[in-house]
Image (cartoon, rainbow, N blue to C red; front, side):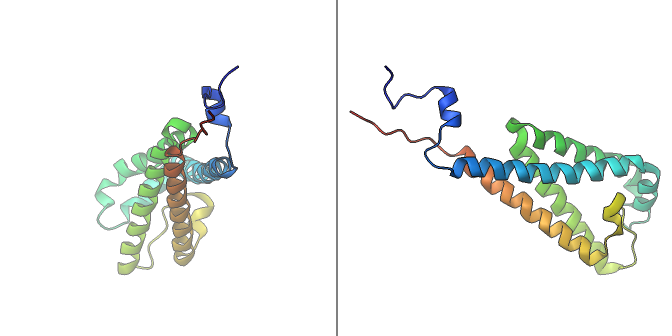
Length: 167
């Protein structure tokens, strides 16, 4: 008979002394799913309307000269983020990349709106119909979701199972 302090890999992964690790993992999966939905929708809609996205990017000051490159790079980066979020081994990288991309989009939005409030939204699909204020709230909500996911994932990776020594 095995000692109660020796655990197989299966038992370490699925045996918890309380429900917190299970709840954390569920929260991480929900957060990842929300971000995957966001970036899948955004990336595919930008690729589906690539010509329009390219023209809209050309209208932005500073980045207009890089419109062709960005019109391909941004949606591909969004879809790569989805792939990173999907796999457990790369999920934390996907959460960091989500945070980075949302932060860049939000900072870019703030800077642009400081100079010109009449700029068109270059987001795809339904998101393009948001007002600039709604867009900022939307971005801040997803920034918060990304940060929460990173905090949960980082703390769950540092979780160690404590075995009671019974002698």
